Image 1: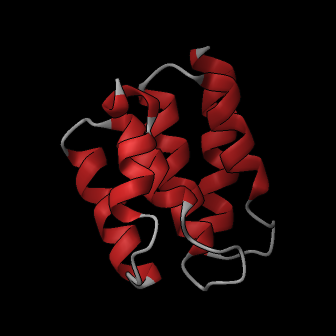
Image 2: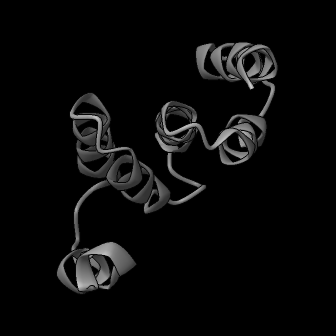
Length: 102
């Protein structure tokens, strides 16, 4: 169906001019509602050069982890640059947690 394939998601939201913060807020809301796939999709729309990108990777990683998609979660967490930022520290910690939980 269109819903499960994600085509509807792209058709409805693909042309949106939502800000990165809006996308991040939507990703967080989806995560809170346990809609892990949607959380990942919203987070994935944030450009790598945006200041919210690292936080989006954390949200996507958390969503993937809760969905027991540990390899995807590892990729999200590993993508966050190790620059000493709070996002960096949390990503490194979360990456270690996957090893314990997987």
